[in-house]
Image (cartoon, rainbow, N blue to C red):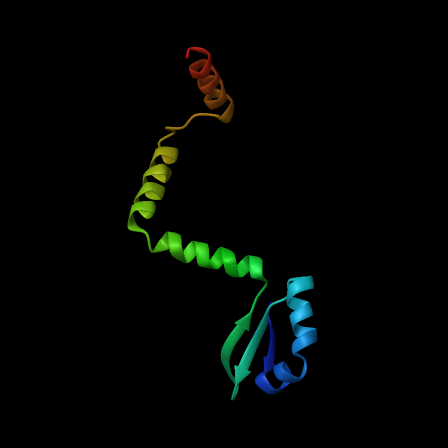
Length: 94
């Protein structure tokens, strides 16, 4: 759950709040006039959100994900062991 702080408190305690986010992976929701204005999240989570947004905006990637999920639902998959064996066999036959 995010800690909610008014912008005035955010300014006064920026260093402490930044440490909470960076070191303890807390979330901080900053409000202005009682309404949410910004969120401070750990950099790893921000990067993951950016990557997710990029994936979701790429129709080709979404189509490939949907195809893969359908194949999994139909049982059309191979185990990691089978894949490794097949790759080893291909390398050996070269």
